[in-house]
Length: 84
Image 1 (cartoon, rainbow, N blue to C red):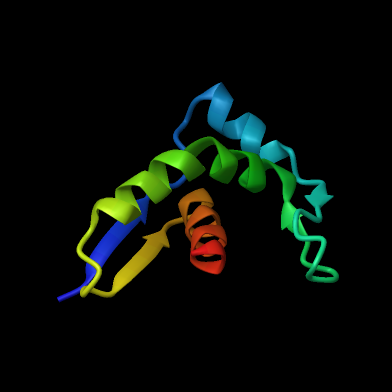
Image 2 (tube, rainbow, N blue to C red):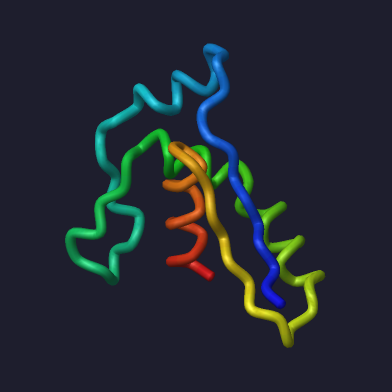
């Protein structure tokens, strides 16, 4: 049995679209050359990072965990999978 953590895509409100429109790239990993990330998706991930890791640490360690999502949620899940 796996544990799935699912991130939703963009909701039709102005705050979500502001994240989507911040499409410049950032390089948040100085040790990994050319690891650029969409700026808005990086900010969205940072906004939930502490909550996500608190939830991950509360889960059983013997079960595989998968972060998945759709659209913006897919981008956030990929960042989380990379940092997990």
